[in-house]
Length: 70
Image (cartoon, rainbow, N blue to C red; front, top):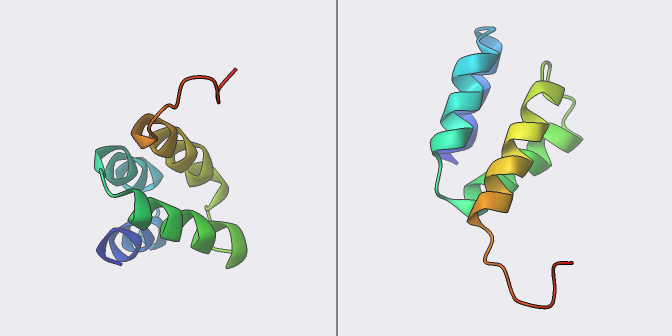
């Protein structure tokens, strides 16, 4: 929840770059998924700017299973 609150604080302050930096520094996949769900469903202002960085960071954290990704 801390990541979500920190990112929302940065978005509220109008600092999308700082919010994206928080996303890129996170190693907590569950927190990133929670944040993505909130950004996607809650109609948060400036959310579209963060969906890409969240998805990118999640893809970096995901374990790759041979044969599943083609």
